[in-house]
Length: 321
Ligand SMILES: Nc1ncnc2c1ncn2[C@@H]1O[C@H](COP(=O)(O)OP(=O)(O)O)[C@@H](O)[C@H]1O
Ligand SMILES: N[C@@H](CCOP(=O)(O)O)C(=O)O
Image (cartoon, rainbow, N blue to C red; front, side):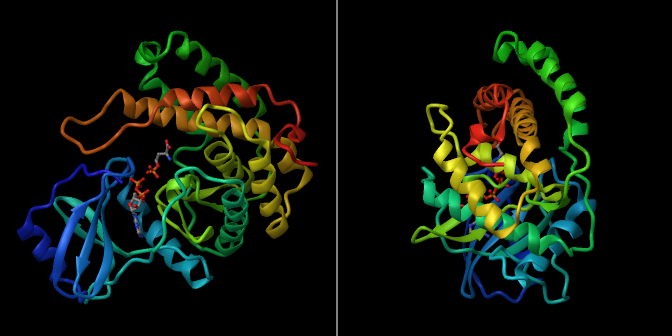
């Protein structure tokens, strides 16, 4: 995560007095990530993550996020769980932001995911979909297909300063996706941002999943397409069909994908590439002064979006229908 909000020592002291987690030894800002403010909190009781929710998190969604982590953890998904304060409440307020403390997960995210990581990830994603199926709180995808045009409208006039012709290319893609977006595929709770930096590994085995703050109800196959984009391209932009085969194959062994879901993958992957292009473009044009954050390059996702536009058949992802 990034650090957008600094916390004064006395505010932290007052906040932590609500908890029974020992005495603070250190509280260090974590520079990774782009969405919320996170601190690594070391106390005499152990290590924790202190999260202050920033711009994209709506307070009304916090019961969904916190409840989902508890729900998934109770079904065997290794994910952070909110630490309850002495009064039994997880959510508090710190430096004017909603804030929680969650449990710390051991492990490292893979800087260069290998085929074996992709297979582990595919199986874990399917497991997460199954584990979330009976979660009772619904949340619409605030960054789903219907949100992309209004989101782009906020950056459209400056898009061509990032790349010549970008505005026209996004307009055209939005129109294509509007005409072809599938509506009747299996849906449920999805993670929606399961990038390598949100998956921890220990000895090459997936040990935990973090960052549920984009989780929502949407198409399961859309979540697969997010992972295809995030895990199966090389740093030079080349698509790695072996990684895609491993990811999707492992997913299907845990949760089978229907013929309709497989057929829709190219359009879903084009859409999920556009979704990350748009949020990155939005943030690229608006880096808050003084924030400890490294904005992510929107053009990486333009290239991925173009790749999927050229996919006619799911076999091009190395997958048999
Ligand atoms: N529960 C956790 N256990 C261990 N490390 C964590 C945990 N949550 C976050 N982190 C650390 O913080 C970094 C950013 O977290 P993340 O949730 O991805 O932030 P953002 O939502 O801003 O992307 C992770 O890469 C990891 O180093
Ligand atoms: N995954 C997104 C950015 C938000 O993810 P985070 O895990 O870094 O908060 C992207 O790559 O655009």
